[in-house]
Every structure is written in C-alpha cells, then in structure tokens.
Length: 173
Image 1 (tube, rainbow, N blue to C red):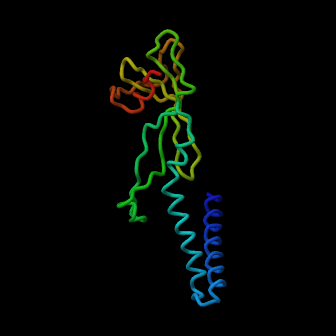
Image 2: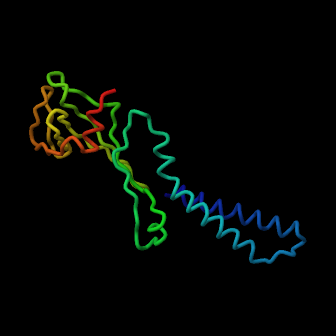
C-alpha cells in the first residue's frame, strides 16, 4: 500500500513537471492553475489505472499450474463508478503445483487454495478433494487427510461435480 501511495505521488509530480515545462516553453502564457491540475490529474489517472489493472498484473505472472477458480467483481456504494465499471480486488486460486494424490486412492487429493486480496496478506488454505464422490473438505481446522484418503477431524462437504474448486482439483493434466 505504501508503494501505491509513493507511485501515485510520483505520477502527480511527473505530470505537474510536464505542466511546468509547458508553461515555461509557452513563455508563461498558460495559466498557473495548470500545474496543480496536472498533479491532481496525474494522481487520479494513475490511481484508476493501478486499481483496474491490478488483477491482470497479478494473475499474469502466476504459473500455468495455478488455476483461478473465483474472481468476483466488486461494486461498492462509496465508489459509484464501480456499478458501471466493476473492479476485481480479490481472487481465489488452486495451487496444482503442490497437489498430492493419495497412494491408495488417486481420486483423493490434497492441495492448497490461495486467497489473494488487494492490500492484504495472501492466505494459503489446505483442502482435501474427493473427485469420485464430488466432495471437498477444508483442512485448516485441525482436520487430517491420511495417506489412504481417510479424513479425520473434519467433515466432507458434498459440492457436486460443477463446483469450480473441485473441477480445478480433479482436472487431469
């Protein structure tokens, strides 16, 4: 967040500098208010670009083995323009790189779900998946998945084959 603030101030200073240069080149025939207006416009334009390009910039550098399963668009009252142009400030992805299959039952898998939110620390939540049964279970509350695929200390949640998280975990290849 601090880097966003510094970059916003730098963008404002940069556009204010361009406005000052234009005033100097024009022999100060351009109005004085052009400099602070340039600073404000620079900060505003950078902030809008930074906000709306965040999701593409972050997901663009993820490995192909990381599957995005949810990326809701936000519409909030204190930013009324988001009703016309929704913005994505969070997403959930399945890390298939570290996925572990059960040795006894290949339909049982364990993987981490990555929850990424703008200006928040990234969270990694372990999950168990039963591809044959259309179920999944969170392993963050002390639940354990045994090597044979037995779940202890937690409950399976029947989500069906259309669940995006289950589909990403059970996809072959």
